[in-house]
Amino acid sequence: MTTEEKIKLMQAYVDGAEIEYQGLSRTSSWSQTKDPSWEWFTTDFRIKAKPKILYYYESPNGEVALAVSGTRISEDWAKVGWELIKSETL
Image (cartoon, rainbow, N blue to C red; front, side, top):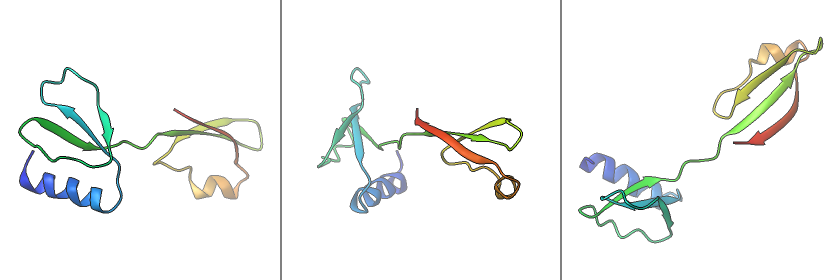
């Protein structure tokens, strides 16, 4: 990890992002930490991924479209009557 990447990660932590860590041996899974040690020689760190949400939309004629969080259905679709019918966390 470059110095710039470390700075971005630490700044994200200061800004409230949740941080996870894993030993460099990769024999354990990622764990969350409230107080990172920043021991770069023995540990990897990352920002905890946000859960993705799957959205189901239905058109006026019954067609169904799916969208994943981070993307969005076209505003034009909403203008012609597409409606959100359900969502679920992946």
